[in-house]
Length: 240
Image (tube, rainbow, N blue to C red):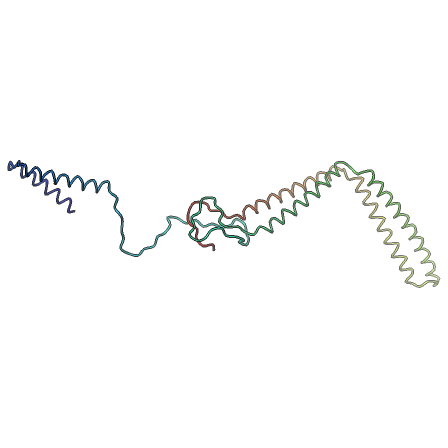
């Protein structure tokens, strides 16, 4: 306001002097001095930088806040920044415990290896040595059943004549049941081996491998989500 008043007075004096015919050298010098001050003052106003000072207490707040949450459930294992640290976009802030997810990945890897081996056997078909082994096992179990049937018949005949204790006949019956069960298992294993390259079994094995691979990939994604990163540049706040 003072500067504006000075300019107005200078202009008014100049106009009055011109009307009165004043043109002395002294007056010109005075006019040029005032004009110089006006130019300097205007330059300061236009181009100068003024420091803003507020004589009061205040609180500095961020222009925006970003709430960061983990994409998976878990326990925080490690924090990489402190409160107030400046972080860049994409910088890792914390890490969740990933042990459970990695355990699932290892389990899936083991199952994939198992089913891959079984699929190879199904595609190649049974080995001649394995077929021979099971055929011999079946013959051996049949011999055991035949012997157990004879022992069971003799024990029953003696028990009917009260020549042996009832427990002896019960034991012979139990031995016959066990022998028949072992023969049944051996014959079933041989049938499975001989029918191992059936198309439906090959398809089932392939489907199981694909399912396990999908499960393994999902676990890998969960492991990646245990990394908590900053979405943008800014200052970190306490973890809650």
